[in-house]
Image (cartoon, rainbow, N blue to C red; front, top):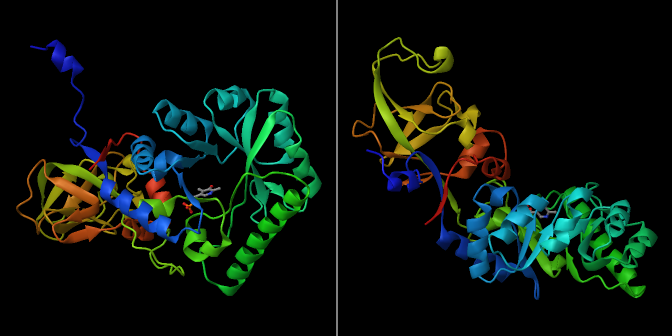
Length: 383
Ligand SMILES: *Cc1c(COP(=O)(O)O)cnc(C)c1O
């Protein structure tokens, strides 16, 4: 019979597919990054896109505990979620906020990026006092007012309803050591500090200055600033394993991705399995149905034995096409496999390991994309 307590019960977090984030790894990465930051430069944790898939609230709470007092997000909804979850410190929205949402900026004590001088006028017209960081385009040509438009930038400092508490820029070639990319990054750094000095010489108080993201810190910590906006490195990874930054840090991956064996099935020689019946078995095989699919963030491009999973410390290749919610793997060589066994998609099992690098390489992308596409239905648990 159903009871009230059955109705109050929640589905188990580790019953189907889930993400584990390691508290220890977050701490280690924060410590390693802080050691490399320029003097008086504070860590601004970039927790946009659900903290690169790790879970914005659990990650930000952990960081608050470690004394991190500044966070970068992409959208106002992300910022409000953090505030509602009790996150304290400066919350900077790095991207565009639509005018309809301007009232929320003051209500939740958020800082808005001024992405252009036009945008500053719009924000100023709203009327409430709003904290802003001015985004300066020093060569990336994405958000930001062009640094040569110094008069317009100055005008923002005189807008009645805006309080300029920061000035920032973003480097677009900081991740490689190619000579032309290095030259470009250095020119951007110079343009940024030059703009700042011209503004300050004219009496504009710029507040917190920042231009380094993860690769900026790994390659150009000497560029300085009051904040470093760190995303991918905080999660213990570079964008690509083979990048060799000038300052390699002892980073530790924070995220593991896990699922379960739902059932086992014998596949006879000559049979295929899954949509399209790819991967015809040449001999009798044992297949395990695993409770995770591309809707959970497992790239479909790992299908047909390009990717593998770990079960009981051994690798089991993926069979056929990955489905939205399920994946077939070949466990013929792991006869001890049982229903309900944990399956590791990213992380460690026994002395075997599958890294986010391996998956993102196979999927022809970077770890940033792989992680930020982790499915919203996966519970995130801190271990
Ligand atoms: C996403 C983002 C960052 C963080 O970048 P990482 O390379 O992941 O450290 C920093 N600054 C801005 C403006 C961003 O959009």
